[in-house]
Image (cartoon, rainbow, N blue to C red; front, side, top):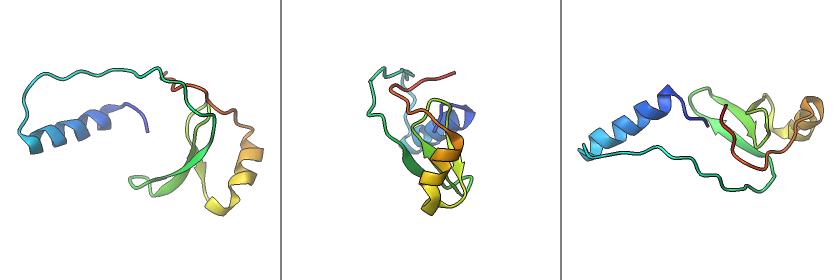
Length: 84
């Protein structure tokens, strides 16, 4: 869900599987997004997260209570992808 050290490890694993050793580039897409929230299952953390807000992902302990989570967290929908 973010560009971090793990992102590079995953890419490296894919490239080694493909036996690719050519040039690479990392870029940023400045595309405007639809302002909406989505639940995302993070298999590494084994939890649901709400994504689409300006302050990053929000842990959702019970996916059936997304509306309540939104109300409590008072989150703002993001219009663009932002990296710190």
